[in-house]
Amino acid sequence: MAQDLNPVLILGAGINGAALARELLLNQIPVVLVDHADIASGTTSWSSRLIHGGLRYLEHGEASLVYESLAERERFLRNSPEHVSPLELMIPVKSQFAGLISSAAGFFNLPIFKSKNPSRGAWAIRSGLTMYDFLAGSQNLGSHKRMSPKQWKPIGFDASFVDVFSYYDGQIEFPELYVSTLIHDCQQIAQQHGVRFTLRTYRRPKLNGKHFEFENLLDFDAAIDPLEPSVLINASGPSGDETLQELGIRSNRLFGGTRGSHLISHKPVLKEALGPLGIYAEAFDGRPVFILPWNGGVLIGTTDIRHDGDPEQATASQEEIDYLLKCVNSVLPGVDLGQDDITQHYSGVRPLPYVPASSTASIPRGHWLHEHTSTPWPCYTIVGGKLTTCRSLAEHSAKKILKQLGREVVADSKKRKTYEGDPPQIEPGQRARFIMQHLTGIDSASDIQTLAAAAISQLHAKTMADIVERRLMLVFDPGLSRSQLSGIADALIAADKLAADAKQETIETYIQRLQSRFGKQILPD
Image (cartoon, rainbow, N blue to C red):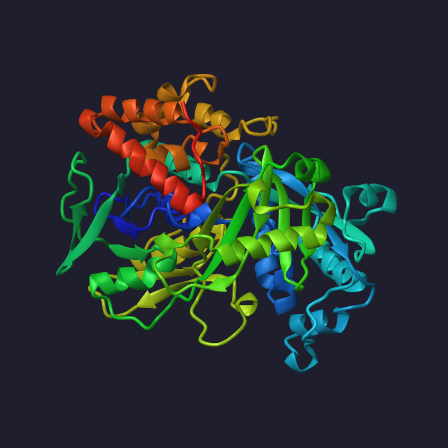
């Protein structure tokens, strides 16, 4: 079917690019997936790691997006339980009636009734959760409930909170590894259907007439022949405008991303206060803050600040760190969280549409394909998108691309599982090793060098950052040591990805990256 068709070229191997590649391959369309860095190295790696319906989107009238997101949440939980698990979230409230009219005004797009006071009381929260349950339909997760004082008083909420509700969403600990899973699935589909799938990372595309050439950013990689695509998809997230500009494709500004920063803490009193439940609360200034059990620690986020610089250089500022610490202490004052209690931080830029003047919270969170008409082949840019809706975005986009190519939709990924059987029981802090074993067959108890070698040979890792930050997920291990980095370097050397005489310099340079980008300290040998 696809023998007479040039591949679709997707620029950007994040979660949206990889999901779209899978959807096209299921429809027997050849794909070349290219990224100027590693897979999942952009926005995918910097999120709040939730698979959620978007409860707060209801206040901005985005009920259709919430409905779509809740349906995708259910599919994630059913199809990929090795990646996503249910998470019960508590919402403490400070009054009974605050925000009820304002929330309704947002839902029905009646700005005249919007209040400058951002607080939401019990009735507003209960109304939102009731709508959330209604849109979710008969899913397997439970409905919201009002918690009794005996349940929530021992947690240590600030005295200003008078009531607590709880509801369920999903948590994806490592979306980076979900992208590896999607790539693995792409390879299996391509082999099954006899259709081309080519993944190339660390390549910079250059346009020469109708053909693309690919500058090799790593000396040891194989070349790609020049390619004239049947369709070009720009899936480079918040860097989408820069990608178009570098290729000489004319376009108005499409992206106006906002920066979201997160903190990670392993403070025992904070972990004990949460237990297995997360918190979604109004902080001291009325903005929502997540305090979530995650990977054996606690994940805190997020900020929402306009970001006009290079998305790849986004880091959590001291102002943001102080702000998030204040947020936590305004919700759980007994925890007394301080700078010294932060293990590390991370920050990324959301691929939101450009909106000249509005609050960041009201920028639309949906997604669409923007068509460019000045190119020699059909060309689209993916605008928006989030973890939860990556599959539905891919399905909608594939339908449009197939129509452009004159092909019929013959398959979709609605019921495609990445894990068979009952949801696995995974101990906190062990999910990355479990997924690595599932994808590669390598025993999860293997030493670091063996696991790193599997990441290189089977999961397309090429650099130390690829292995530490997006395969073994050691970047989030408070026990990461120089000796582990040495073992990873040895695996890279054995695979001809690193020169032996560059080992120590590579380790030192990477330790500096961990300090500057994540605020992370490495344990000495």
